[in-house]
Length: 76
Ligand SMILES: [Zn+2]
Image 1 (tube, helix red, strand yellow):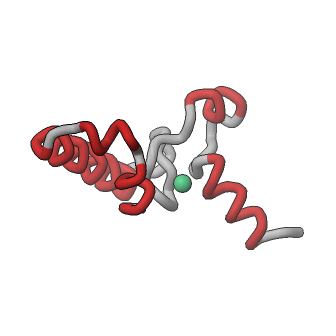
Image 2 (image 1 turned 60 degrees about the horizontal axis):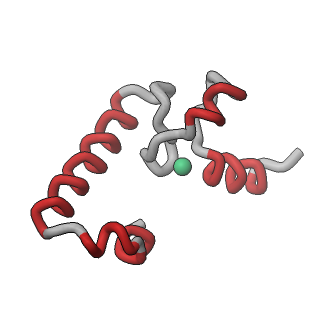
């Protein structure tokens, strides 16, 4: 996860303070995902599930990326 975070050009432009605040938000989101799955956060990676995906699948518990991986692992 940290690799993708570092690769983002926009993130590199942020000051250390801003990066720390961003990390705080991400950590908080992950806490929320653990406490309340199904609130729009992916249960696997803790990131926000896209609003388009939630509109199509209101009860989605995984982001599109994790759902794809899950379906590959649970193919039937
Ligand atoms: Zn995910």
